[in-house]
Length: 276
Image (cartoon, rainbow, N blue to C red; front, top):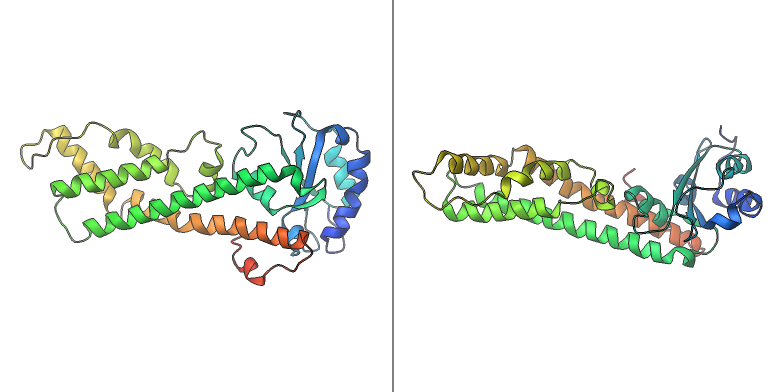
């Protein structure tokens, strides 16, 4: 289903008004609703779906009005992608809801109704940005330390191992649906999960010669993963490069939505920072 005209935010908002007032269960369930995606950004096309985010009231921890999705489709006259947030400590359940919340323009309720969730969302993104910046710094430091050496000297061993352990500790993000884990869409979190058990074994002693086979294998394992050509370093570097772009993309969407909601024209440079 798709309309024959380019959908606009104001048109879709007006079409939805009766849904929030008349659809069975909405008054009991729905605290706030917004539109995100291309329509919210003013970049919709003729066949664009309507991306709708609904935040339910605090006492609603599961379920939704049975006819809500169908009623929204009927009102909008085109396909509707409906995303829901149930309040509680795990409301984000991945970064997609974080992004949708920040990018949404209000169509029902008041932005102040969800300001607490918006603060949580921004904090998650800021934490994610800080994490990838630290990882980037550590990856650069490791490369600088080992690029000019051919042997794994004692002091270098421990310094690089410490940095590598810090990286995999930063990327120790659980459970699997944690917003920071899903936001860092590169494979670095999984690579860190694979490395972590081996890296945190008791350290071998500092002898240069006559190391037991187990200790020799441990340091070789560490050395191999420190190389710039290793899967671990390439993955961590790629993620550290992509992570800030992902966060900037989400904050840019937020600023675009806020500008429109304030009756302003968004800064054109914000659109240039969108990565998808």
